[in-house]
Length: 263
Image (tube, rainbow, N blue to C red; front, side, top):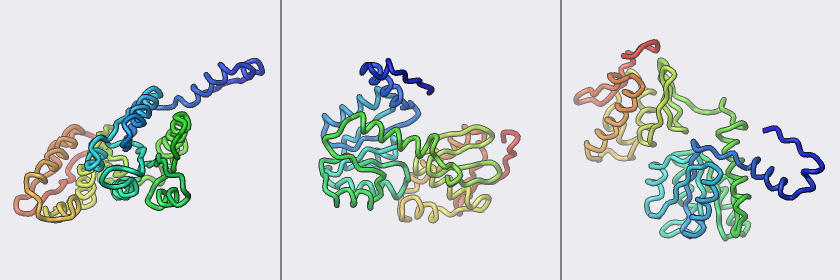
């Protein structure tokens, strides 16, 4: 955006306000924010403000299901309160950090030095104290979005797993092949990483269960559902026959696709 500020414009508060709004309005519908805040009024005001500037916004209402909601929404950024029902924000920040490196901003009435230190030590990227200015929150969100996903992002450091042109970006939970891409859920991304890493070898059922659920004793139907979903994602990329079930052994990507044509 190329904005020239003349002396006449500077003398007019209205134009200054318009310029600030134009600079702030960088939200994109492709970017999603998840709000974890138990004050319904604050959550609603944040939702409306961020939606006005182009973000997709979701709020958690069941605070025993924060991680489940996180995986369902797959946000690009989380706004997280400290004082929450059941478990505090520090706990949920640690849980999110086990599965994602996305930006996490704390919003809290706690303004002590140790509260901010604890937030950062538990994996947060920034700490905003209440009461806050909604435009300041917006500016900090915009800054994090640019840093991680936009003009300031260092994509050279982004981890990817690839085999014969099939490429997975685990952190962004995206799978691509032959100039097409598809979004994955967290479990689907973990399963794809296991399969691609071992391709074309067979991965046992137990090895997959230990990676996805930290245990072996999960109903077979649960694993079957996740495998079926991954097959659907592969099929949407033109790789409908690439994931095989090896009866009595496990699953494998056969690696027989050609990067120039569909199977």
